[in-house]
Amino acid sequence: MKLPVIRQIQRTCTVEEIETAIKVLEHTSEAASLKSEEVDVIGELISNMCGALEVHQMITDGIPEKDAANTFMKKVLGSIDR
Image 1 (cartoon, rainbow, N blue to C red):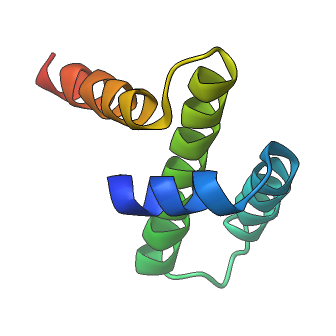
Image 2: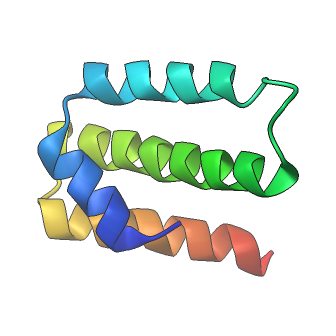
């Protein structure tokens, strides 16, 4: 996950647009002709979009954008450390 990518998605896309893009990428990732590297890239894109959705939700809940992004990344890093 890359915070600059998450911020770009969160700032420029609606929740509905992100959810639609995730669905499209999930279905695309099931194509038998894809190479594993391509599936990895799709997975990374989906992860960033899911992160943008979480940041959107935190902002909707009243958390300032910068704090929401930082909170999300701390959560991600905390789960990696476990």
